[in-house]
Image 1 (cartoon, rainbow, N blue to C red):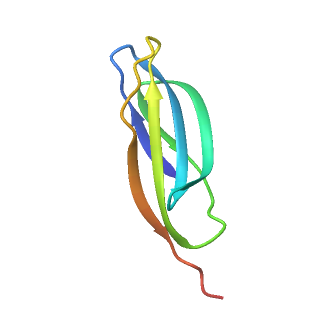
Image 2 (tube, rainbow, N blue to C red):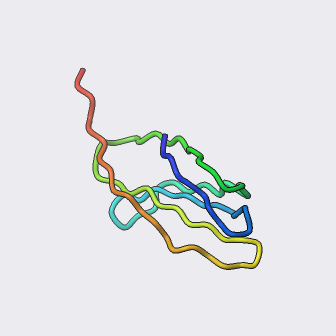
Length: 79
């Protein structure tokens, strides 16, 4: 699972996460309103390769966070 932290002065934010492979977005989840805290999201890769996990949030006033991404690699499992 991918772990992310929400912190907003208002105490909550509307969260969207996505996974990219190269320039293509291959999975997106609008996770809804979260209170400040630590959360996780689970996603399974269909193929090996280099990916990025990204997230962004917006508060009730409409102020959007910057987009944060972290690269990761999936290796093909050997039989």
